[in-house]
Image (cartoon, rainbow, N blue to C red; front, side, top):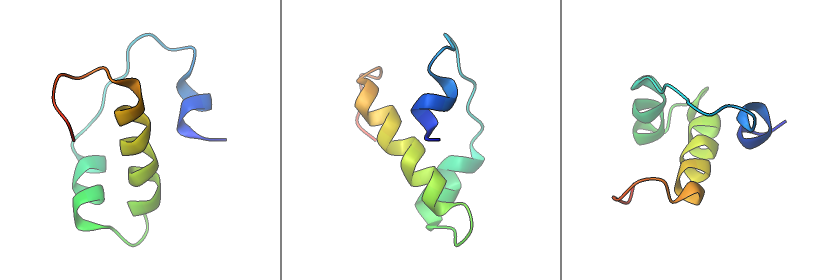
Length: 51
């Protein structure tokens, strides 16, 4: 199950800073899911800025 499938029926998602830090640091354990989350957010085109 990917991120999109897990949260597809939600209208609002709260995101802590930890996944962003894991993505930047390429965390050994959580880096993969943080990368998936970042790609999913980019695909939404929901933000006026690029990540």
